[in-house]
Length: 572
Image 1 (cartoon, rainbow, N blue to C red):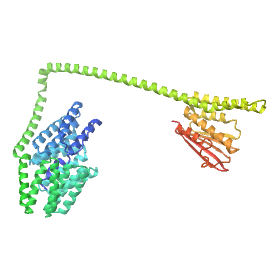
Image 2 (cartoon, one colour):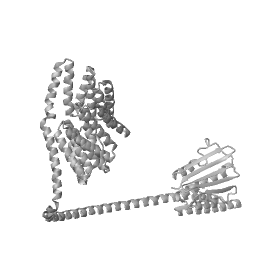
Image 3 (cartoon, rainbow, N blue to C red):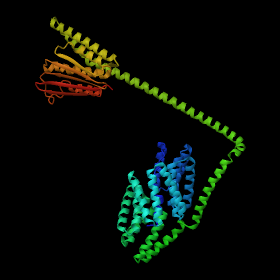
């Protein structure tokens, strides 16, 4: 297992987050890249290049450094270590130049992992401690957990098991404090490597199986492959060869399915050793040949020389940059003319871009203004049509009914003085109803106190009726539609009480605050069975009126004890 722990230097934060906030569009794009990376998408290189062009255009350097990190990880896991180092160094240059702290911290860890894989411990420690120092400066819990995990792995490889376990436990505790389950699985796996080296194989296998469960849940295909081969190796060390071979083949399938060349190479060597122990030399030879064929494609001394060249080149470039800064004053004079011409060209380009942008904005504003105008006109037409329908319905339902009855009465009037009096009374009632309807139509909104005054006025001729009010905010406004439906429903409820209940006392109780109004009409009449009379007394009509304004209609009645109607509605 100790041969594998270096791979965890990259994978333990390979799916790390970027702490710097991006725009919603950029963050969505970066999330897709991380998802594609975790799924080992073969098109990742294409999408990374496309994303690089986008973030360069808007100068999102935090996202750019993360793109270089993901690209470096991809090269590392594909076995191209020299390309991984080169890519990480490009990301570090951008991060240091633009002070992109969180992303730079992770890249320090990643490049340290690759140097460790290639036996350059000094450089590996230097980069990992650099990242850990930056994590402490930023108070970055996830970054600190990652750093301690990596230091633990390095100490583990050097055989310093107690120190290694100390850092692993710190890493696990930090990850647990922020529910970072993916990183917790790597801490569990690292702890298992120490337990295995202490011959505590059953405990090691238990920790590894916990890590495997977490990685399957988060779809970490690389992590699943590593946990599987580590379980196999622990079984081998505890002399349980059949279980070791079973998990060894599962690891072979997992690593080859995602192109994980480092792990595939190691798995071939591991299976070769297992079959030797089982005395199955044909299969042992088969896996030895596979291991030998792949070995040279993953690691050789020439690549180590390339890593050293990359590091030297990076350090040289930094020194050259410092020299350029010192000689800046001398070069400014030589470049003065060129800078002036370039500035002029840039101004022309910017002016043209500004003109195009402004023209496009003006066209867009014109289109939006036209659309809003058309929308307002349509809304006005709809409102006018609705108002016409409402007025016609009011005249038809109220005034029209009275006039029809008057007409029928006049036709049969003869010389009966009683009928003449009925006509006179009906005519007066019709005039009152007409005034009421016109008042309702002409008002777009009315204060609550005015509503109460009008309600008292309209009901004043009913001897057995009284109106009481509890108005907390007299200035609160009621819309015309609300007033109309509330008036009509109250009027119909009072008429029902007068016509059917034989009540000697009717009370209309108005209660309101700044948001809503409640009208309660109660009488001491005969009452009725609501179940039997659900369609009588216009109950459905009153309920429909209140529903149309978003209000509620409730009625309770007990025979020989009276009836109570409750109307409630909000002002807006």
